[in-house]
Length: 346
Image (cartoon, rainbow, N blue to C red):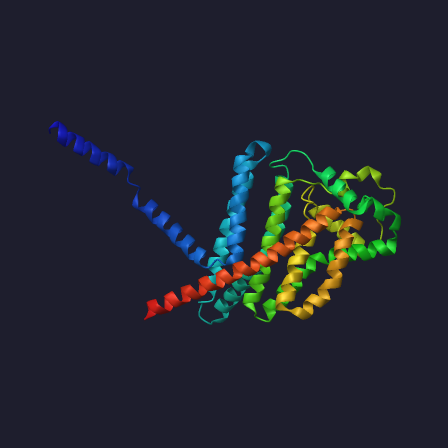
């Protein structure tokens, strides 16, 4: 064998050595096919959610030295993203199942979770902020928020409210604060059970955009809230009735130290309020007085500054208006895909 033939043989042998085994190629192809199928079932909500997870993972990688467990955070986010994609795929396939008793139950199961997982996703992202709040800035920015409040009102509102503290008023304020947890559930429930799927996913999309604005701002501008910053300056405890106890129990296990600005309570309530205005006007008028009281209660119960409330009003409203535009684009994309499928069928 001459030198040229030897080189050809060695090159061929080297190429064969680097060729992945058939089973590996098959696995990669299967994963790619599943990912493509799942992606085709994603809507506007999913692309915002996945985009946020990708963006926050990128920030974690860039500022890993500021975190205790960056690999764990990125791994968890990747797992959540995979679960979203698989859930979309399962929800899409469930609609194609034949109508038998067992399969009908399976279809209903996946259909339900396909539509209601957004609530769990938003809770996950908020709780995760406890680990991300000092991702970029190691300090707290509460002094700037208090200075803004004083410029706006002439007082420190959380401390000013203390002279009004009374068990009956506290109970009313804690009830108002608690109503935040039900706005999106009620709006979503009405739209879901009335089978208005387009309006349902529009409301979810308004909310996730408003929340994502808040999550990103909280990572870049950490604030710990009056509850922590002014901890030594309160002279009267907040005591009330059952709602006071319920809210305190929720905050005992779910409170995040940080992520106060902008108020996610206000942002979420505003997104739901705008959603009710657009899709169920009668529900808007029911929500409105409760949302107004809730905005005041966030300051009374010492969880937010006035600046947080105004920030939440802005991010929740942005979520609505940007969500409306995004849903129009999503519907146009779906119509184009349907036309392409129809032409392909002919």
